[in-house]
Length: 242
Image (cartoon, rainbow, N blue to C red):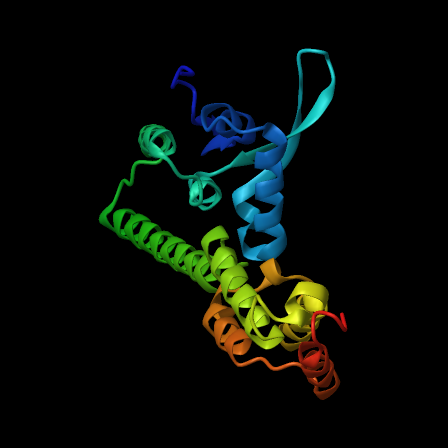
């Protein structure tokens, strides 16, 4: 197991970690972590201030991309990382962030101790406002991940099962002539209508908030009149005719 030290560092007065550290400890390719971060920032511009893209020099002397992230950025990034080891590393990171932020607060407090009750009140109000804004930002990000982001792996699997079931039904069952010879036409027709209805380029681009509506759409989908007529004609044929 990698050494659990230097997980969180201080940069420009803020507690941060790097995409390199995340990739190393969560045992992922660095390019995968970079992709995950870029997907987050592309989906929601409000999270961009949680990440700073920069570069580092690798062992070969080559300049490569790297990303700094604060606690909120880290939390959003690894929310979907699962497994016993992943949980262990999340807890270690949270502990490291807490220690570094406590250290930063101590340093700042030593520099700017309030001298009067008025200064103390002003400092308290400022901290409260910052905390309120931070809570609001986190709540907005959580709402985005729950509803606006694309469906997760489990939801995609459920969509696939419902889609397959409906297409088989429309074809007339797995033993039907149409399913055995031309079922692709039904799958393509459903895919076309599905993407047109939800205005998306592919199934897995569906937003989480539309998942239940998508299940309802698939279960209630019917082919066009022309395709239905073709299905009936093929199914009416005998095996010899085919």
